Length: 232
Image 1: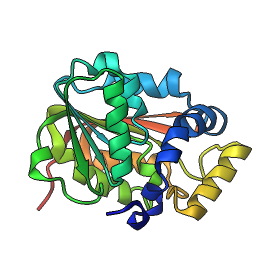
Image 2: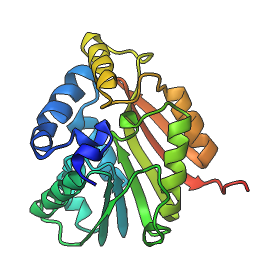
Image 3: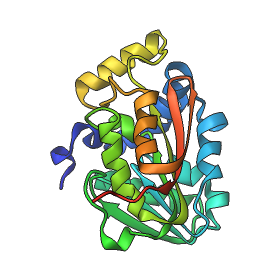
């Protein structure tokens, strides 16, 4: 699948955009629009939950988080990267390697709405979903429920699903945040216009027994453990 055939939320990540991503999103937007610091809030949260043996990062962006967390990630034997965009996967892997990671890196090019292959099931101590959910079409709790149903089978016993997502128009956005949410939704880069913390938490509690959600600025940080068996 070429970048031009991807959903807008995935195809926007060309090599050029990936080189600018940290400056535009992780530095400027996180500080001024979303009011959730990358280095003070998001990176420590990512690092805190890195899988001890195997870690799956879904929606990898520029690969900033695993690369920046390289000292702690060094103890992890396997890092799997999952994304719909092959350019993003290659960029993230190269960045993690450049940061000094010497373990096994696996790539999975697929949609987060599609079932996981058998090779990714039951293996991971942690699955990270950073700035993925707000890029997906649909609204909470439905789209979050679909994503959680996909990634929960990846967990090893005792594993955690965790991440961060930008909330929609009902969150306490500032002037810049409101305009970015509207513009990104109009372009199809975001799909979060009606996403709320309450409906995210509803989806998490329907899928996991142990759930924590915290809001910093207009970003919801979440962690979930102990998947609830699916009802047949």
